[in-house]
Amino acid sequence: MNKLQITPPAPVQKALDTLNRAGFEAFIVGGCVRDALRGTAPHDWDCTTSAKPDEICACFRDYHVIETGLQHGTVTVVIDKMPIEITTYRIDGVYADHRRPDSVTFTDSLTDDLARRDFTVNAMAYHPKKGLIDPFHGADDLRRGAISCVGRAEDRFDEDGLRILRAMRFASVLDFETAPETAAAIHAQKKLLHHISAERIDAELTKLLCGKAAERVLTEYADVLFTVLPELAPMRGFDQKNPHHDYDVYTHTLKTVAAAPREPVLRWAALLHDSGKPHCFTEDERGGHFYAHAAVSTEIARRALHAMKCDRKRLDRVILLVQKHDTVWDGGEKQLKRTVQKIGFEAAYQLLQLHRADVAAQAAVHREERIAQADAMLEKLDALQAADACMSIKKLDVTGSDLLTLGIPQGREIGQWLHVLLEQVMDGNCPNEHDRLLDYVKMRMKQKG
Image (tube, rainbow, N blue to C red; front, side):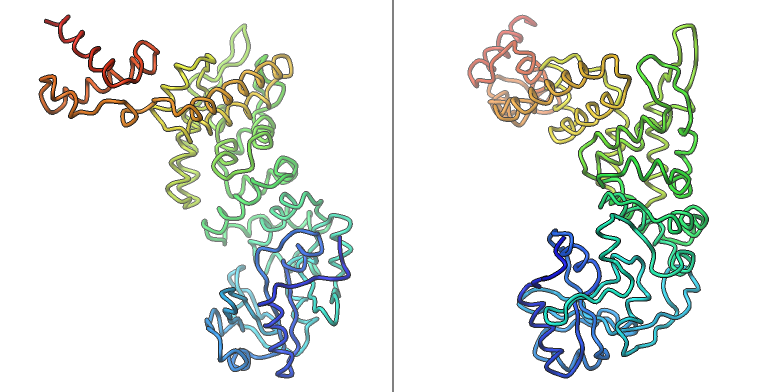
């Protein structure tokens, strides 16, 4: 971790220099400092300054200025096509809605401004000439890998309930531990999340799920997850009583999440894929069974994602994957081709990735063998794509117009013939060649007589 020198991009340095020349203090602040100290490239570069909003606007009158949130002291300045958010030092007032301050008071103190921030690792400022400003020891927490609130954790969460999920998200994404007092406050104040909009919860949970330590964090804070997704609570501790499973449903679920690629659709599908199991359990002399659990999981996933106001594209794909996650794969190309025909290549690939993650989270007895089978199917699917294999009507080497020349009437029958030809090609009974396909149709028509 480099704590000696951070080199901001040229537009950011230009913003600092412009404010400094006008007689104001100015620093980069927050996440960009945290990420730079960790040696990772910051996504956004934010600045804080002693200049008031009207003074910021005056300093950058020759640039495109967006009045992002003047009442909270925030202005966005576009320098060399780069938007830079610049905020006046401020002290936040009361958070009556547990989300945003009712008012803010501008201040000349950088330390007062840093004191209002959520976590110590986000409460650092930096200037190339003045160095690191770190009154709450965020750099120390970075070194030891800890998420700790600035000041009393109870106060920070009471101000903004979303910080509860943000703490969990940072712990997951950075693979950090949570300081004991911050962890205790997360558990104690989890009901503050009821004040937070569904969209914000969805955004934070998605980032959390895609973090490298999602399994650990959601194990430690299962009670918090169930506060926003109560549909998942029955999974915890539910013994599957099945030789294919070493873990209860919730533990298996989190291990599936950890084994899935860190991509929102797959991580959400992994989280929800077995949510219906506790509602479908039966037991006999062979052990526990979960007949039709995929259908129940699909409905639970649909309700949960609707409640989260998840975007429609992600919702539809997650629902599809949950619905089909218990597909029994035979390892053959025919099944792969038919799956692609029905749901498309991308969805088929994701379905196999989910399957691989699912079997990786099952009992050890056949785990390696089943992972190898899943990997082999993924390789076959890659090969089919590389070969541009015909798995859809639009890839057939004949069209409806070609079939019209054979005397087949326009309309439904044309479509039926195209589907027949696709089946023959995918099953390997007929090559995808124009003349051979037409010969096949002629032969079948002759047979029908």
